[in-house]
Length: 218
Image (tube, rainbow, N blue to C red; front, side, top):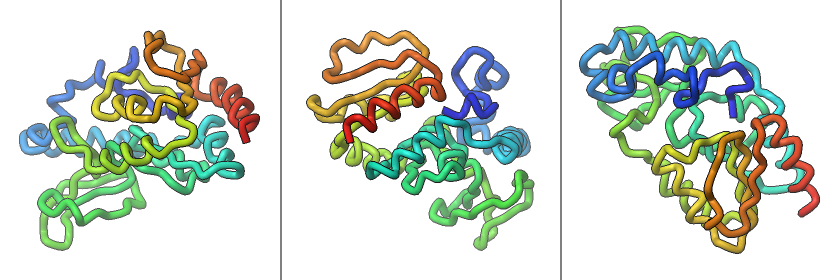
């Protein structure tokens, strides 16, 4: 979704996991082993997000709020949906523009700058870490996401490999009679999913097509 805003993806060709090992920057063990490296990795991601702008796909998703009650569920950690105007955004994998206490996860802080430094502590004296769900950690918003998917009248999936679990399961909990749309240039074998329309395109071009289709349903 945010690739067309210039933000590197994690899994695609040329993505971040080709440059970094997951076990070095995206696990709690990595945090314990080399805190400075982990901080720098997410500081650079945060700086990139702050320099980026929402693309047309983000804006078209926000525009759907004029006609529908839109709930965005995202695996992205950036804030481009919010900056595009989406009011209801659920971040499954955390938020790069927030930090949190290492020992008290409920202590979460908005970040106004791109850098978390070693020695930046929360109110109980614990180092602030990126507010990101690392590999091996629970996805605290997953139950809420499942409940939203089960209640959907229209379900849209944009720019995902459908390979990252548990988020990839969401399309399978949507009731079979509900219209579903998948926007992605990849190849999928999803014939077993009922009422699914695949738009094989990038997020921006796909949302241009899809917004017309969706508005016809209104």
